Length: 237
Image (cartoon, rainbow, N blue to C red; front, side):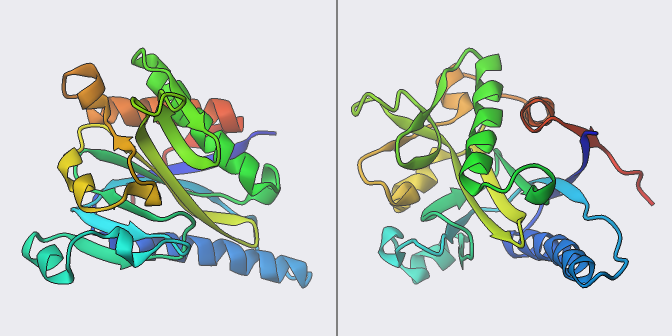
């Protein structure tokens, strides 16, 4: 029986607010699992896939280095760029308008208990999405996320960053795909802690602006395919 994944688009939301939404959903699921482990009736865990865009913000993973932010806190404030140290994996990255951010909160015990496999599946979702636009997304050995031409040092460029956290096999955080993103923001950080690597977007690669809703539709379709699940839109109210 396929698992149901409930999708919600949070729209344009401050990073901290979206983090709170994720935390709440993760806590609901982990509390259920704690009660179930004690033999109490807690109901089934529920899988979620959240979409959003963030106002400009840099986020630092738990293994990241603050020196990978190349501008001062004063300049961050002057430019109205947020900054959050987080509990996800990975290093520094940027979120902002024109970027599709996806946060899956799923109980991996109902799929598979393997974080590495989970990350590879997320990469597959994005690789399939890029293929729709005629782009060959690929992996770079030892570097989570999706790249174009990763084997060519002069041309390698990252188009999707990823970083996750898992508690009792329930995931949070996720992926950030550059669609129509202003790539100038990446010049003020060492993206993902990897020096001398370029960052790109669908808009830059294709030479035109891409409708965000089209990209989300493709991601949902490919998420269903890769995770062998059913996407559901809950009724409002």
